Image 1 (cartoon, one colour):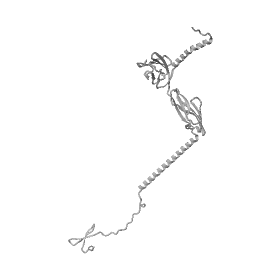
Image 2: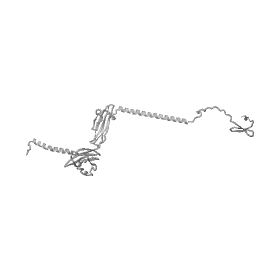
Image 3: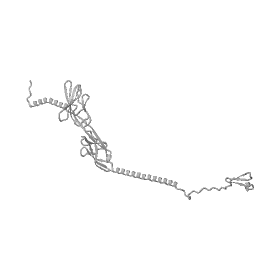
Image 4: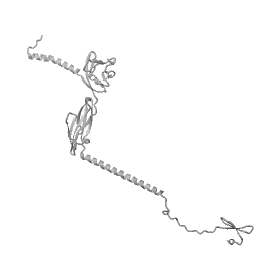
Length: 330
């Protein structure tokens, strides 16, 4: 029979040798039961899939849920009989379904679905293993907005302060990033990650900055180009003068067109009025002169009747003429 060493140093060595296996077993057990982090979006779906050892046959899996306060409830069971709900009228109702014979899918996620989900896995021949999932539900990330708070522009540069903003309660974090790879970053955070102060020279007006809103699930961003904010004052005045000149030219062309149209209308009215005025005798053109034609006597016909009278037949008269009438000679 062996004896224990009597020295204090020997006793410490023995305690360390006996304690190490116990600590290792405790740490390995904690590692196995440490919840796996799973994130979901409000209104979306999430899959809880346990890690199974290779070459092992699963007899059944019991799923439980704990919101952190109150008792842990059993929500589903996957076994030889298929997928069974322990209480179909609980808070999940018909939002739970089996996936790939071992996983649990939760649809139409709600805020109250956040919590710890446990999977008690029973393997052949008689092994029981517990795995846990920590589910966190997040709001969908909104599109951030860029707000300009201060601005001063000169021909040599531009100084401004920009704010990246998301609605309160969205749970998203915002940050700024440089979108252009040309030159150094001319901005710095000046009041948290959502405030950006810029001192840009004119050579950096072609750069752009992006405001990013993110949570553990997704991220969304919006960019702004510095040229849209820091346009030089001289260029702005040049554009104003150009717009003014174009406007004046348009007005003058419109006036000229109206004047020409009115002139043509007056001309047409004058021609139409001249056609309706009667011509006076004084203004009437002279009649063409014709040569006088000598009228000749009308043709006469002579006829003798039974009494010896001579009748002269004219176009409109008939009269007897004695035989001794000088007309007989005609």
